[in-house]
Image 1 (cartoon, helix red, strand yellow):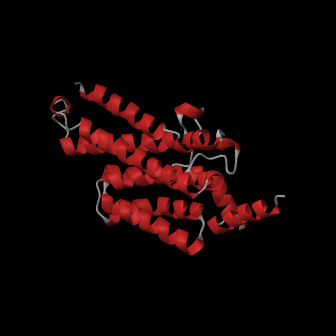
Image 2 (cartoon, rainbow, N blue to C red):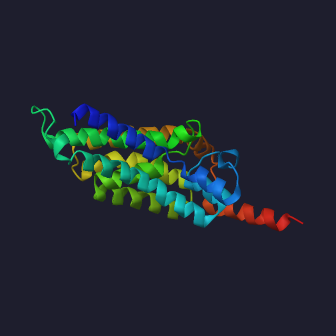
Image 3 (cartoon, rainbow, N blue to C red):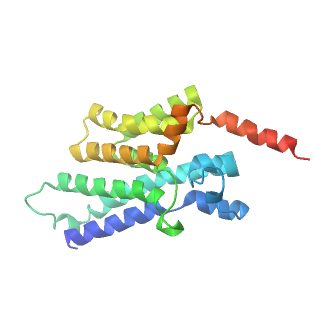
Amino acid sequence: MNVWVGLALVAIAAYLLGSIPTGYWAGQLLKGIDIRQYGSKSTGATNTLRILGRGPAIVVLLVDVFKGVAAIALTRWVYSLPSLATSIPPTVAQNLWVAWVVTVAGLLAIFAHSKSIWIGFQGGKSAATGLGVLFALAWPVGLGAAAVFILVLLLTRIVSLGSILTAIAAPLLMLLFQQPLPYLLLAIAGGAYVLITHRANIQRLLAGGEPQVGKVQSRKDQNRKDQP
């Protein structure tokens, strides 16, 4: 297999994996609704929690993380095939070439989560898939990013703030754990993209109007109580 054909194939595969609209499918399967018509209009785990509940949200979160892991794992496996590994240009070290290809695949998976070909190039905000990419690239970085997210969520109960601070922390974690330059650039570009997808959340945070997880649930419960 030609090395450029291999690059094209893993790029397409990474995009398609990232495009899987988990939250949208959950809404269709469980309630026959388009989740994009409710709440924040996102197909991510947080909006799934608001609309479908905790169980579906956990499943959506895990699948979205797995999409990022799968994109990186598939890319590494393809470039481990002898027919492709031997076609890498001799002027480039194999591990460096694979690192750059993996970076491309990771960025495509992150982008695809928010721009899914299956639902009109809409989707979530790419934080969960980005976390999966970090785990697959370097598990210490992934663990560090998950720790930042969980800590912020426990302290503030604001999911978006956890995602935003995790995106900012990702490049710092890459530097801390001395990861290669392609991975650092992925963390910078992917983190910047996650910040872009959260721009409305950032505006609400600055205005003091971003909802907390507990308060969202309380409103839902109150609405149920008010119903006749």
